[in-house]
Image (cartoon, rainbow, N blue to C red; front, side):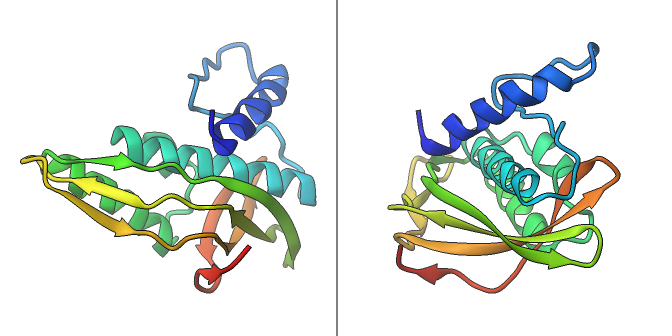
Length: 170
């Protein structure tokens, strides 16, 4: 089990305790039951988003990823579009394992936003395969981190935007 999947499972367990009885989360879908604008809540959502991003790339299913993304988020649209384009053309992603090593809330943006840095230890390459079986490395950045801006919409977090570029190094 990857670090992302492990984190998602722990968030899922805590979230399901407060989820409504009609909710039926799947193994990869983690509900955002933590709706407070706290560093811990933002960090848990960051892990949730990364787990869902990994699921979308490995399965082609962007439904939940879209629900966790702000409609104006350009990086979210790139993630979703790349998945839809590859799977829509009969291809797939064959290696999508992001190894999240830590997540840290950095600061706030207004009343509802939090900047969160996500560190990846030994981030594995993203490898795509077209319908003929030809494989191509899409990215292979090595260890490093990204900073994201998450915003609370009512009681649910959404990714609003990536803040800055990939920073190499652990």
